[in-house]
Image 1 (cartoon, rainbow, N blue to C red):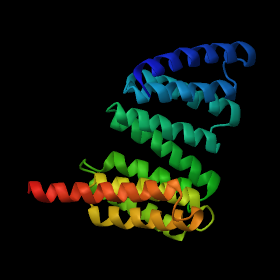
Image 2: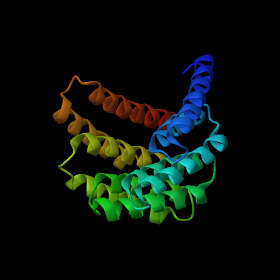
Image 3: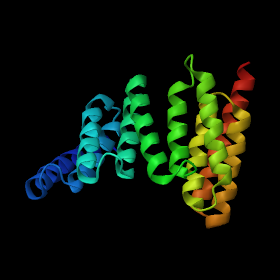
Length: 219
């Protein structure tokens, strides 16, 4: 989004938040949905510090509206973890991801795609630290869930992309390629070879190869 357009969008979202709070009350789920957009805009502008308390407020609203063990609260915690991690708060991100994982495991079952996504997020907190072995174990667990997943091919492909990206960040190019390729196959079967989702998977695979080739030239 262009800077001017982003600023205008931020002003409009501020007005929508105020209007929804006035009509529905400060703890209504519609306020949380609008706050999510507000936080997304701040994250896009790399203003993660300002986005963090907004994400925390979304968690509080969703917890009050649906109960602390609802999948909507897991989603809000996952997004909070993403923002905290981008802001450099690895410990805070890990706490949010662990809450999301616990909620989704209880609400959806240990073999659900959302659980795999939570595992990938949590693993990304640990890769690059002295807990890298635990991060690798979590990625393997997520991979096992996704390999067996047959109920939701669209969500499966999206989480496979997240898994491949995490392996890429961990410099495990063999597994990154494996799961990008699997994402291609799942989206191709679900949407067709010419669908934009399949094209995105192929583009990500191309980026992986390009990056790998560049690294070989530099070495």
